[in-house]
Length: 75
Image 1 (cartoon, helix red, strand yellow):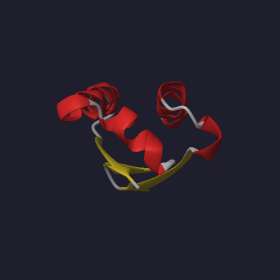
Image 2 (cartoon, helix red, strand yellow; image 1 turned 90 degrees about the vertical axis):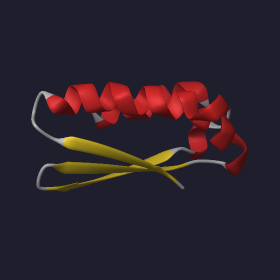
Image 3 (tube, rainbow, N blue to C red; image 1 turned 135 degrees about the horizontal axis):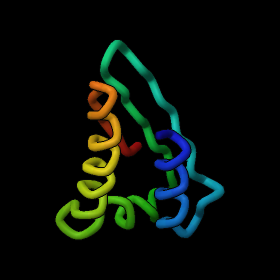
Image 4 (cartoon, helix red, strand yellow; image 1 turned 60 degrees about the vertical axis):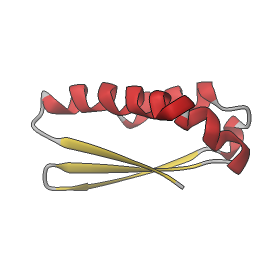
């Protein structure tokens, strides 16, 4: 799941070399923290948050099969 999220985020931003991703798993909760350039935050969030919502929905559907919940924080 982490590899898929890294691929998606790196494909959307202009400065893919500044993207770093951390993940913490606590029980049935997985929390991803995305660090990226301030100029690329808008690309990940999208108009009215549509891009980040789509990414969250994708990861939640994958995690649901294993009974886990996914949270994504953009730093």
